[in-house]
Image 1 (cartoon, helix red, strand yellow):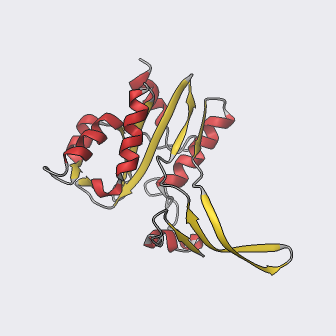
Image 2 (tube, helix red, strand yellow):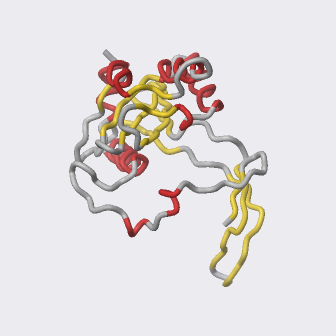
Length: 201
């Protein structure tokens, strides 16, 4: 299937997006073999089932251009375009407050590259902050399976300074400004316990 961005440029999946799901690494507590997105989705399902919060991954709007019908009961999308640039990955409500966040991973061990974020995402985060919403990013260092919550105000500050300064956030500064997210089973990534301690105390 061919998917294109609003500017007509072809969307090329990252290598890890093209991998067959059946070839995932074996699951263990230290490295469960799951992507950050999968862990967050499972955690959000837990929060919803327990009545803790309503947080969902935002759907990406697509304009379908070409569809094949190999049989009457099935349709296969052959070509589609992103209707608009996406903002952040997740949003919802927790304890009466609007929550909006992005989730990113890196294989780097000492810093988080700012190229993982796009201008429209940073602008969106700034708009959420201006409306007093809770906005942050979850950053996973996959080499050590460490996940940090970093408030959007820090991310935005680093992103706008990258033209004149470094183009990544040192891990040491993420550790100093951010908060470690505990791993577990229920939920897998209990980021809302950290949100509660930061924004509701």
